[in-house]
Length: 278
Image (cartoon, rainbow, N blue to C red; front, side, top):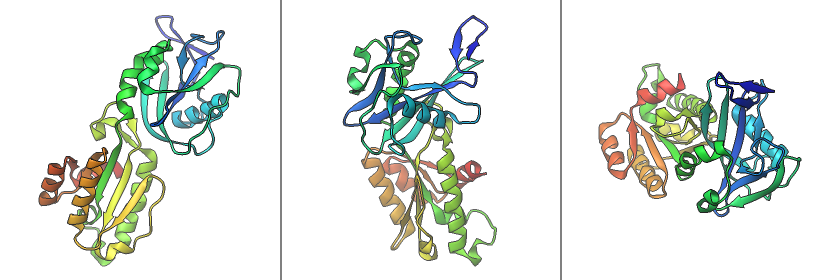
């Protein structure tokens, strides 16, 4: 179903549309050469289409990529979202990292060909106008890998809710809530990033009695400090920055904040994280 804007522009998908920009650092991005009879036929873009009324843009983008390009289940991990908002209609581009390499398969009549295109060669192609307009921002975002590094002891201790009676239990509850936040992701503005929405990796450093908490799941990691929790957080922060990650550290400890900022991390207080968890 087409949606028509006040200026007469027409957009496909009553509930909006979404597409998947799958990124493999070795091979580039997965692009679709659109069949001639399709909208802007003959141009190159990304697999995508109308989303259903009961699905998120991320779910819709992955479903469409599976239908149009044979993208296997579990082969990509969403990292960020770019939204084109026409007022009456939205198109969401979902950037996703390739976790399990795969070869695309033309599985419906909308594609002339599917190809992994090196990032530097994308603009050599005749691009779909919408994708061409978004590409500069999308390309820049491909190299941004955010991680939120959490000082668990500092966050737990920031609220007088009886945590001292069961430090491990309070930390386990915090990790569980962080797992939920990691699944939902964060608005770009909350991380000081471009685009619209991100799903960063969360790394939680625990110490002392809280070292007994179970491992986390999904996009959340638990690091256990053998000695000083502050030293472990500073060490992890330095490692992550050196590896090219965009680090947002969470602590209200002033001395630790200084160490992390000198390493190149952006530091937020515990209130910032609690607001995201609320």
